[in-house]
Length: 271
Picture 1 (tube, rainbow, N blue to C red):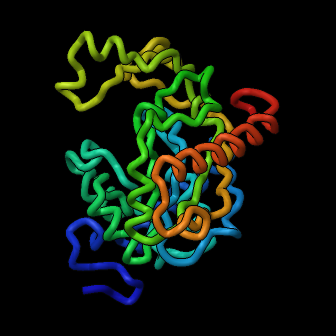
Picture 2 (spheres, rainbow, N blue to C red):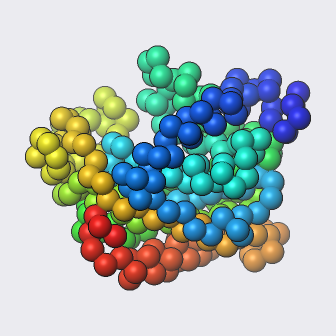
């Protein structure tokens, strides 16, 4: 059963989106993002109607700002009757804040949820690189690396929606990310305990060196997001597209756009 804006209100994940609450949250977040991070989002004029899979690079470690920065500008342009759903790790829904995240459009990262959200006409945001990407070393901040994950392509093909690549710059400057710590995670058995293959080490304010804890405060770096032209998979790759070919194309156009953003960036943090 759907409602007037196409959402499947009977679905336990998708149906929890609350446009009124989301609007209030965006009202609180907007001045913070625009003043502290001086956030900018470009390219929304070419955003397609209906369902779309937004594929982004993930930045900012424990405090990624990618989704809030995109959402604030997206909702300002398109309104709150067009939900933005974010595919998220299960840990986000633990504790008393889990309900708040669900009402703001965060859903568990699985193919079923993604398909339901896309077919309802929703905009779904996915970061194929996940934590691996969000904790990439600062020296590699301008590298698109999904760690070989290509499931997002099949998700878009099965739902019959375009892929909208989006790249951001600045998030890996909120502190100095030194290493993902894959070797440390393996040695300490972190993967078995926390479902994570990394134990990142960074340096920031106010605690200096951190291996996730203690959590440093993000520096006020300027973050810019560029939304790219939508990719109609069937039109470009035919009715039986090759997943590897589509993935390579998506990463290539994202890398080119990220290189352009990096060329325009004059100073770290200041932008």
